[in-house]
Length: 358
Length: 243
Image 1: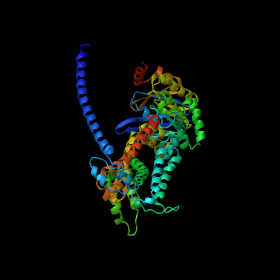
Image 2: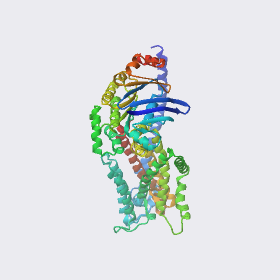
Image 3: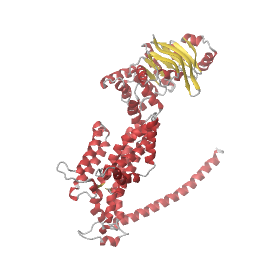
């Protein structure tokens, strides 16, 4: 007992000292959070202006500027933020397209629906959404892609971008581990080159430089060019994530597959990749969330995604100066999607947990 | 008739000479136990039989097919040779049943229904049909190893290789796996087992192969091996593991 005593009293003293400082840190954190919450509540709710009489200008809002929020900028601007420059009377089309995407995501969260049908839906739904937005068939008026904007643009760029990037990423990841030197060197060169250059560079190249290199009169849709640039970039990042998963598969798995007579492709597609992808779900989703928000970079090349459209609302002289409200709204929309994806992933990890344990 | 024939086989890992002039002939239905101290090359030896390891010189003929390094002969041999590993190496993302039906469906191109029937037959044989729909991680080590045996049998192999199948098991689970192997031996399967289970060697082996430092030191019947070992190295090894 005696030899233990100095040790106990020492650790007790340390933990007391730690607890005294931790009490102080907690108090400071709680106090400052409460102050921030109080201030935000005042600004966003109590002192805020919620509606303006029809036809009124923004004078009333300007009177409270800095003290209270002016939400009419969001309520009046929301349709532009969500759907961009898309013709106003046709807004049901981008709205429906967004709903189709959300329904696709939601149905993918149901374990019992993981069938080939769902895989087919991931091709059919984005294609249908694009046709719906583009029109020109079934009596829908044609809407050129430079009028597309807002949320549907963000959803298309990220969802289609990710879908198209995954096969390329798998090929690059396998290529980087290939026994064939030419394939390995090409894969490494591609991944390192793309990862070493900012995405904006590729968007500029796709939008400004690409037309210089093709014959006059030959054009590729600007949105498609931006989409392709995204696919090429996302693939390089995903390839590294997937390679990490491939490396984590024990040699015994390859040996067991080989000893049963499975060839390289059978072993890769049936044994190695399914395990590698499961292992890397958190990193894959992290990449998805990052690129979901990075699609806002298309504003650089003149496309108005969710954030770009939000920015455009602020240019309106009537609402000039109320950017905080607009950005809060756009931020909230991004957050809803990213948080939903994050929750979905946690569910997915729980579902796959039993089968993923070694 | 010879089922496995190894002549003057040599293998190096870099500068390390891991197999030295190996000559081993296994007749159809023979049960060979390979033993020896760790690092003696016994695992490498049986891994050369299904070309998980490549030999650098000599001849290996398995079921009439010589392993030369082209994919065609490797595939031919692997289809006929089943292997059971120390670490089981079940596919963790597939159920027990799917583990067993995978190769018959993709390599033998059997229809799913037939592959399932075969799988259930062998799961029954290793006495765990009720676990068919579980994942490997939900099973005990002994159960996993029995599934691994069933999985190999589903390919209807002519030869079975066992690479220390009981070494990673808790002691109380060794017996259930050995019993499965004994019943397999009684059916006349050609078997090559790397194992330290001397009771198993005594009970089922036709011949015991003792390896040390990459060489086959001694090949004997179990009776001669345990009672009248010829070489000093064999005697030392037996003293170590039987005490």
